[in-house]
Image (cartoon, rainbow, N blue to C red):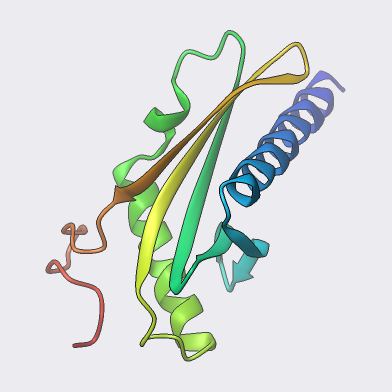
Length: 140
């Protein structure tokens, strides 16, 4: 039973973080196109538009007492999955012609309330090397 409560609390903190990230980005003028976009076994937390640029946003939420910062959750493996998910999204919606960037929104939650939101534009580069692959990710 305790594992179920811990899992429910983790999901609630994640939802709270994504809500805060969406509101923060919209206040900055970005338009949220999708939340929790599932692409096969991959997922994009948020897909936004910043004028003519598609923005793939990874949201990392941490509760008080967490040993890692939200930004530390953006591991090399997570970055690779984010790049693959973006490729799937661009292919599915035939959007390869659009400029893109990858942002990170870090959210700190304390006592069930959002204490801080930090938005980092261009948090990862689409050209960074991935395990077993050459750098570069677009087909041209």
